[in-house]
Length: 364
Ligand code: ATP
Ligand code: MG
Image (cartoon, rainbow, N blue to C red; front, side, top):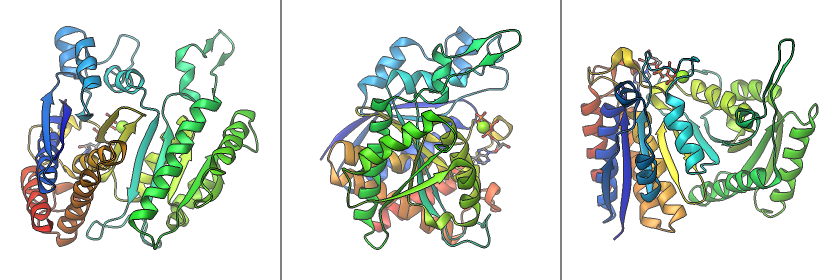
């Protein structure tokens, strides 16, 4: 038996509602393998910023660092903006990403039977985008931008160490996916613009250097422009995709859109020691407080959390618990009895959560 401490940030809007469901499911799935989750609530949100002027106080960041994993609902309210226009979301999300050095952004794209298809002409989709999370074009925010009257430049930074670690993460992920489903080949595809920019050519070269350590995993290559067409026309070709920060931002949104949209897209931000898990969507203030938000993305993010605890702590049982959640969600979506309004049903978030908990317990 293991006991994991989870720092839980419900956040704003629908955040606390979907987090409740995700944590119920996670606790139930962990219990099926004899594990215990200790949930520690943190108060970091745009609402807190409106109240106190600070969204993520230092002691909350330290509590997040002390936990085994961080689970986040959603952050942001339309009225919570800094005077320069930046949203307060970044204070919390980027604060945790940089504070905990979460260098790999993981965004799975998977179609589920029972969820209306967006792309009607393609085979099943099941791939994962791994986005370099802390450098690339976004490193410009840390001093690389030059703002003049006539010319403004940003700087794209690619470091050998930063690229190696995220590419290695992608190859290890491909290996782990293949071990779970040996019938599917392990392939890592690098997405770049190495035909036009030195920084991306460097990224690709490091990709090849790291790939040599993984002879059992196939390599793929795509330029970013072609990649967007492949994602729409031949998404079944992909397994794990690794790319620079800005490109990852763009293609992970596209990936989410091709599998049925916001309510389903899970995400993880992980580093060597820490991991943070959250839905890819925002706080949806327009439907907050009504109990009708789709908790699927939140629940699938909790599955990613257990999978990651499993691999990073070498705890096979935690991985099994994560997989049970995936299987249970697929079952509930396919049965179609308890879909939330965004998927054409009339179930509440809690009814969906109940159905997933039941499916997790039936499966064990
Ligand atoms: P952010 O800037 O934080 O990414 P956003 O402006 O992109 O937020 P979201 O909060 O993601 O917006 O919401 C966009 C739309 O999708 C809203 O109409 C919202 O109601 C809907 N939506 C988002 N998440 C869900 C969900 N889990 N269930 C149902 N509808 C959702
Ligand atoms: Mg958004």
